[in-house]
Length: 245
Image (cartoon, rainbow, N blue to C red; front, side):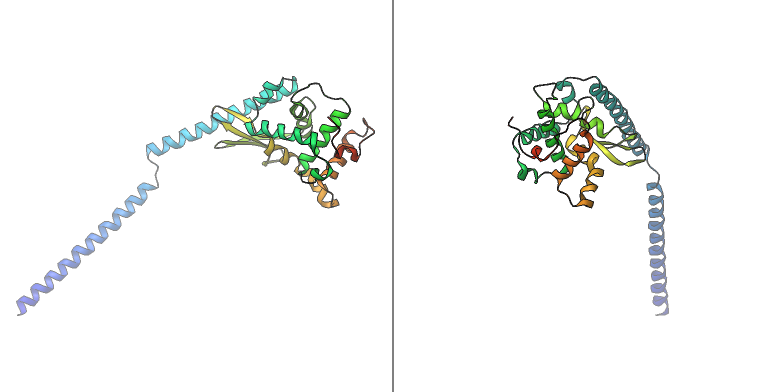
């Protein structure tokens, strides 16, 4: 009987020892696996390097595109050249905004954001003062021509351009992390997104409306009067109505 008990005890001890050894081995393997996971494999390192190289290439292309775009604006490039720098949504937005400038009355203007009201009222000023140098693509001309709306708004010290995946941006030098222009990667080239850019550029001006409790159209007229009062005398609420295009 004692012999049987001793055999059972020995078997249990052996079983516990094997189980402990197995747990220790598993724990050690897990530690080794965890340590190995903290070190990128050559394949992972290569993938990271390729991703970073792709971002660097896009950064270079964005900087080149922006220089070309500014040069086209400065040289008075034709509409087809300027449209090539813009997203498809930008072209559609410009067409829509030009139509609004022709038909929106004062009440309809109240549905507009500040940057839209500003564009519409300024368009009507161009029309009334015969400032157009083109019969077509007039909103594009007003936005992107030399000394046009975009150039006046961005005549500031800009910071470095930044790229994140398929989005690019540039901010002011004093606050480079806050974008004032937005770009989108379009398969092979960068394009400027005007509907996203213009609200960012005009955001600072809109703070005036909050302080004075003004409507967007009143603020737009005020800002245009501030810019052009030395040139044109009749800057009033008549610009809230269509001019009979």
